[in-house]
Length: 143
Image (cartoon, rainbow, N blue to C red; front, side):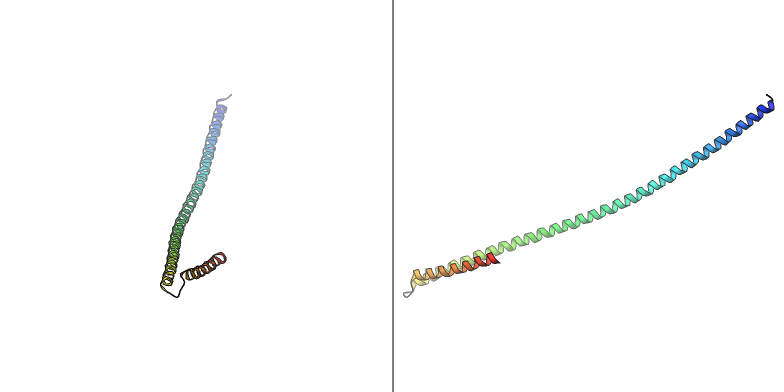
C-alpha cells in the first residue's frame, strides 16, 4: 500500500470518527433535552397536584369546622331542650302539689262545715281528679 492511500484511509477514518463523535454528542444532547422536557412536565404535574391537594385540604378543614359548629349548636339545642323538659316536669309537680293542697283544704273546710260531709267532699274531689287524669291520659295518648 502506498503512503498516500494509508494517509487517505487514516484521514477518512478520522473524519468518520469525528462524524460519529459529533452525531453521538447531538444524540446525547437530544436525549438530555428530552429528559429535561419530561422533568419539566413532571414538575408541572406535581405542582398542579400539590395545589389541588392544598385546596382539597382547605375544603376538608372548612367542612370539619362547619361540622364542629353544627355539633356545638346541636348540643346547645339539646341542653336547652333538657332544661325546658326539666322545667315542665317541675311545673307539673308544682301543679300536682297545688291540687293536693287544694283537695286537703276542701276536706278541711268540709270538716269544719256542719252542713258538709267530709267523705262526700273527698269522694267528689277524687272523682273530679280521676276525670282530670283520664282526660290528661287521653291527651297524652292522642297528642
